Image (cartoon, rainbow, N blue to C red; front, side, top):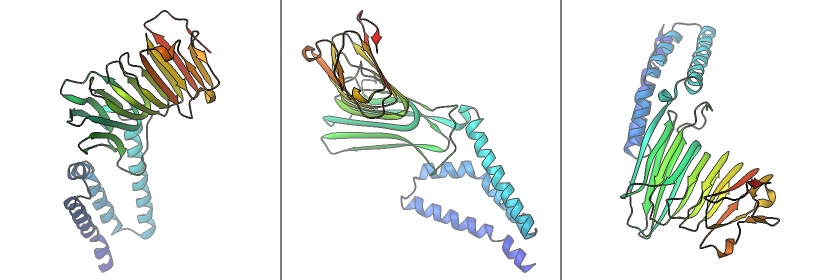
Length: 306
């Protein structure tokens, strides 16, 4: 009876120790307070489960107790899997509003990364905003924002990252990030996601980095020359009338479709009179592209040909 009573009373001291450790880490800044207590509030039913298991184990044989532990693990794993693969999107995602004011620095760098998200970036932010929009975040992930400036360059980083080292992922619902950036502020932009759609028509982006696990779509600016570094399986580039385009790194691409008026070399393609155009943009394909399509918009040009 003594050993059972002692075994049955172990859980409460362990919970108190765990709670004290969490509070200590929050106080020292090792954990972010708001996110930590959100996780605690969402996961508090686990305490009831542990209390029930502890009470049962204090009265059961060793074999029976081991079987119950295995069953509890299976039930918890099944519950997590059901939430990820079967629950409605509104149950497992939340929408974070993004509203970042214009900085005073003369140069701006923006990085937005969410490896499993569909990323959309375009111009048209409000007059007093550097970037605005929305970002969906899964329940086992978190939205992180980092902003810093050295007086000359202002850097903003937005990230969607997992709270746990590994989690079950459902491809049934892909979180969507829809961001708009300032029209007139010169900046360097980096986006990363499962799919990336970038519209530079109303932006002043000089250097663009796009890293997409699947498809990437880029519509070039009519008023600002840019250099774009792109990694994706499938790439689509829309070229407005009057913009000169040179696409480098096409030598390793499996399939490339370009208008019939474009010129080709072993490693690049170029629009007609690209060097003489007032706006000249370079797209540099990094290794990994299997299909590239160049489409001219705003003019009557021949359809893309392989």
